[in-house]
Image (cartoon, rainbow, N blue to C red; front, side, top):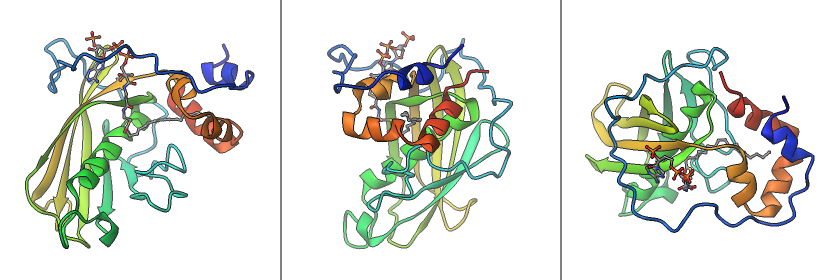
Amino acid sequence: MASSLARRLGAPVTAVGSAHVSAAQPSKTPLVPPDDAVAPVRHPEAPAPGELLGSHYAQCFGCGGEQPHGLHLEARAGEGVNVTAEFTVRTAHQGAPGLAHGGVLATALDETLGSLGWLMHVIAVTGRLETEFVAPVPVDTVLHLDARVTGVHGRKIYCSATGRIGGPEGPVAVRADAVFIEVKVEHFLDNGRNEEIQAAMSDPDQVRRARAFEVNP
Ligand SMILES: CCCCCCCC/C=C\CCCCCCCC(=O)SCCNC(=O)CCNC(=O)[C@H](O)C(C)(C)COP(=O)(O)OP(=O)(O)OC[C@H]1O[C@@H](n2cnc3c(N)ncnc32)[C@H](O)[C@@H]1OP(=O)(O)O
């Protein structure tokens, strides 16, 4: 059966869709998996341990290679449903003099957590993200990030990440717990700005990447 992306590729996008989500009640979803959550499953065609995952979108602020303002995060597959990544804090990332901005660090954590979808072949977006800033992170620091899925409950993917300084085993400077929500590719096609959606759909490499996420076990 044709994928939803393949079906959509036949139909030009004519307008930016309005968000399909209803007016928001604050989410009460806890950040720890419920008792009946299941263990995450590594997709049989997931990238091999140690393999660079690459960017899901060249213009992504977190991982895109063609995004001059971005963090250029490069994540690698772990042995389970986990990833590692390194992020170097640059002068452009400052909040206070010589120190990383907390929002930038949260973005690095969010992006690393977001890349876990590659290992399950699931597209998922951040629903909740709680960050803890344990120690200040100076400019030029290499943040060693490590993220893993802790449980899956329906469309909800529970995951956690740490950012360590001084090496992969160094002290934790930042950490995060998150719930990502699985979505279909239509989430982007229906809500993204038309200009970028059209460009993405005309890019065979982007289409290939979206399909790699979309395939189910
Ligand atoms: C060729 C072109 C192709 C293009 C495609 C490119 C490929 C892309 C590949 C990979 C992309 C990876 C990108 C990673 C980037 C880094 C991560 C980010 O920064 S993502 C951006 C920030 N996040 C958002 O913008 C979400 C905005 N929010 C929403 O869109 C909706 O609220 C959404 C989808 C999250 C949920 O809406 P609903 O209507 O689908 O959800 P309902 O059906 O009501 O709930 C389902 C379950 O989820 C829980 N839930 C819903 N929202 C939640 C929330 N915000 N927090 C926690 N739980 C939530 C609910 O309680 C429910 O749980 P119960 O089944 O009842 O147990």
